[in-house]
Amino acid sequence: MNDYENQKLNLKTKLAYGAGDLGPAITANIAIFYMMVFFTNVAGIPAGLAGSILMVGKIWDAVNDPVVGVLTDKTKSRWGRRLPWLFYGAIPFGIFFFLQWIIPRFSDNQTTQVWSLFWYYVGIGVLSQVFYTVVNLPYTAMTPELTQDYDERTQLNSFRFAFSIGGSIFSLILALIIFQVVSGSEQRYLVLAGVCTVISVLSLYWCVWGTRERIMVFEARRTTNEEVEESIPIVAQLKIVFANRPFLYVIGIYLCSWLAVQVTASMIPYFVVNCMKFKESDVPIILIAVQGTALVTLFLWSKLSERVGKKAVYFMGMSLWIIAQAGLFFLQPGQNILMYVMAIMAGFGVSTAYLVPWSMIPDVIELDELQTGQRREGIFYAFMVQLQKLGLALGLFLVGIALESSGFKETLAGQPQPIQPELALQAIRISVGPLPTICLILGLVLTYFYPITREMHAEIMLKLKERREK
Image (cartoon, rainbow, N blue to C red; front, side, top):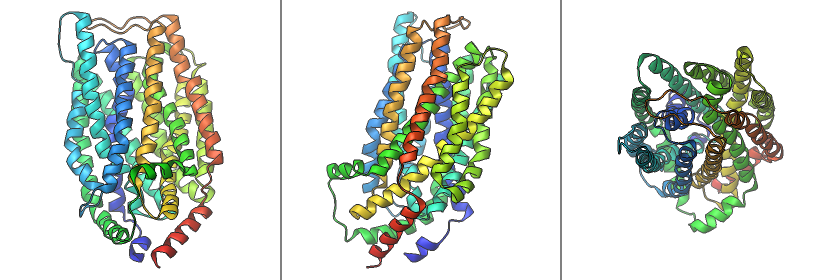
């Protein structure tokens, strides 16, 4: 037990753990930045229906999160509770992601074709979200099983999000290359999806093989401790989870920051092309400026958090991001340099949105263990992600409805992109400026009141150690 608690993670394990977020990051990044555009400008689906497809997928994703979370907590194998889910779920995860980028020809009638595509993408999207949860939720719950050190968890999440942000940048570079080399919008997305699928599946298996030894040690120790624990009914577990006040703060912080990220990400291609008059091929370059800055500053924030704490780091990064996010609303065509400056400023904040909330969750889990005597990583991670996805579902749905209500024109098959009306341009500006800014400010308020400090966490770990040694 003491050997496990005192042994530091080696570089090989940290890299393997980080690789587990590469596949989900690549696929999620392509979906966030391009799926709405793919639906409206390539598949020819109206913006309202496109937003509804994304909403249904996110809602279902939120529904299956706690189910998978509970099931992973109850899984028993020599590879622990999480790794079997990654091992068996990796290939289906890749297949259903790829199928989302196919455009089947159901009918020559435009109305019939649109509604057929709507139901096809709803069905495939639901299945894709199921297998995304199957691999990603168990993966996120592995952090407290790999290390119990307060600062090492922040370091571990630095590796995770280095792969995550690196994967996002890599996917954008892939998109930039493929969009220039491959002709035809439909073919471009198909090739991009195929390459991303292969990389995603392989990276998940890297994670499984690279972390299994450490996880097996933790599992042997946990199983020994569980022999004297009482089982708590699921309903009672959920009541305990939501009675954990620090957990509610973390949920709010994460929801606010990632609602800002994903709404902006979904709308930024429309903003760059329609409002700023950039070429479509310039979109990945601007996105790389954001993600590249986030990657470079990730380890800087991680080191700084060891000195000043997670809350202070979050405040510093978010302050820069809020200035940049609010400034997007006022940008005008021709202010290209300013656009890139704001992208870089936003990158400083985006990296803290990756790093800080996920570094807080293991601390919350240990507080729960101290209070209840059980570890339930799966439930905590599941409900954190569930509420985030419900919020995102509503946000993306409302953005889609707002675009359609403002007169946004989808691209019909074989036709050039139409010129958007002024009301639609204003809706796009509001979606990338004021709305995300409000979310980020709310996240700062919640962070201010988050109660677990380094000193409080040290006290929690001391009490847990005393209990285990009895």
